[in-house]
Amino acid sequence: MVPEKRSLETNRKVVILGAGRRGLGLARHLIEEHRDVVLIDNNPEKIDLAITKLDCMGILGNGTDIAVLTEAGCSDAETFIAVTDSDEINLVSCGIVSSSFKGTKTVATIRSLVYTGKEGLKEGLLGIDHIVNPNAEAAHYIYNIIEQGVYSDVIGFKTSKLLLYNLYIEPHSPYIGSSLTEMRTKLKADFIIAAIHRRGSAFVPFGATSIEPNDTLSIVAETSEVSDILKTIGKIQNKPKRIALVGASKIARALLNLMTPAMRAKIAVIDQDPAVCTVFSERFPEILVIKADITDEDILKEEQLDRYDLLIALTDNDELNIITASYAKRIGITKSMALVKQNNNYVRLASYLDIDSVISTTITTVDSLLRYLRGTNITSLHSLFNGQLEIYEFTITKTSKACDKKLSELNMRKKAIIAGLTNKEGNSVIPNGNATLKEGDSVLVAVNRDSVDFIQKFFS
Image (cartoon, rainbow, N blue to C red; front, side, top):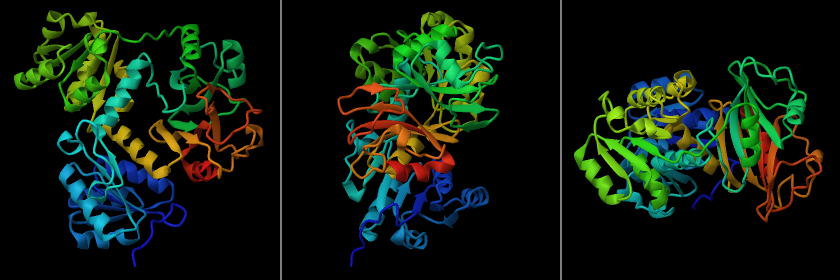
């Protein structure tokens, strides 16, 4: 008898192939949600590190070996996720699991366009239920940041027109000591503070919460409201027009594919590989391609890169990206961003190096995987403050406990805050207690990591 697909309520086991950065990051999130996690890797050091740092089971072996997959418990797992650095292994392992363990969903990370094509690999091939392209996820994230002016890692959502900005409170800010309610009154703007990061810890605040020096506030508001807030505190955002991309990488290619020809006409791409430069010139005739080594101290001046509004370092070298992005600000480039593929510690160092935004491919990929695992009525999901909080975009269904109820009637036990509401007509607002949630509406919900289960059940 073929086992049926199992629901999240009846099965909590997830098997992850690949105990690298993505595998460990995903496992950490799932374990915090009280999932049973099994990690598979053929590197004994990675397995030892995983079982030492995380409350999970580790299996040493090849993910394309049916015996190893059986030992890991794929026969009774809810989901099998392949996140190794090899597209081929991810494809084959998912194919084996899909054909051998009919009740287990399969998810694979695939980078190469050879397998996915420009439009992406359709789910169902080799029995794979869901595909995530890490390069595409990072490119979309970068594109959204550019569109919103490269300010404090702005976060957009699939349905809502509201945006989330992280706003740092300077030590001498006039808002220190004010409650969140008082801050809203002073600014005369319509927004919600969905989260606060304070001295290394993040939490969901409420109206009476006071603002302290060095807090980072996650503000949800419409673009126009946020612009007014930033002007009030002396931080003006401007969408960059002239952009320099350092590194003709796969992510750079994916980013350019998202842009219109008019946008690309104001883009310069810098790379030292002549063959790659030729490919980019032919693929994107609108862009300016500069064959040069960015480490040459004269290049930035010779090519007048200080006239650009934004520099994005997208090479495959984390250290080079960080150094380039930091130096760009020193020579007069207004904004800079850096890509991080190996070392997520650089994300925390960004503010000290005057880099406006650091994009981690690990974080963007894990967010995408979590969004799929959490359910079909979740249209967006983002981690905040190194995963301490999450902000969801839920679609209200008939079966949701919140359907047809006013916000004032929802008892979320101070575990979360509803930061935005979008109705079926596409109108997005900052809601008050009198707002009623209807089927088809979508809501933005900020939640502490240890309360994710409760909130998921509340809105599922």
